[in-house]
Image 1 (cartoon, rainbow, N blue to C red):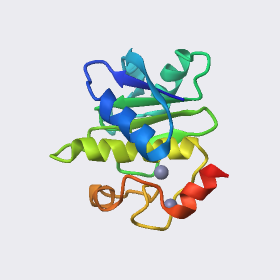
Image 2 (image 1 turned 45 degrees about the horizontal axis):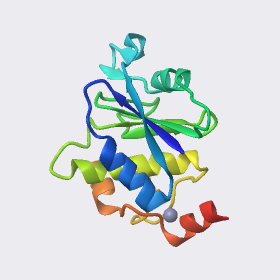
Image 3 (image 1 turned 135 degrees about the horizontal axis):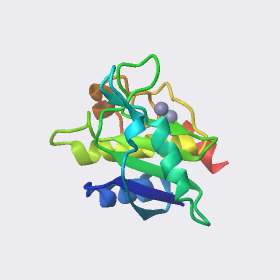
Length: 161
Ligand SMILES: [Zn+2]
Ligand SMILES: [Zn+2]
């Protein structure tokens, strides 16, 4: 079960739920809205550190919740990267996806792919070499657009073991 938390003001739960259920066979539930903690903003980078949302999401931990996935619309980063589409911490069981760089006519599809990708990490999957596999690392939005919503056979086998 993945509990999906939305940044206050967002309205994109359904495409996330559908993508996780259909392509990953992971059940999802809406976990409510959260506000991004002000101390996660890095004024030098003008971006947010998503590791801090992870802690916010975990505070709302509910029984039977295996994973927590937060969706935000602010620009997020990780050390050594100009930006990221999302990040997962399998040890904490929490992940974050940002809509910031997914905007465009294919927004819902892109969000679905990134939600599946980060939840795939929570399930223990690492990056895949196949550019069509949803676990392929997206360096640019083109990479995201070129990959499928689904796992390749090899990745699928790993989570079905
Ligand atoms: Zn990844
Ligand atoms: Zn794969």
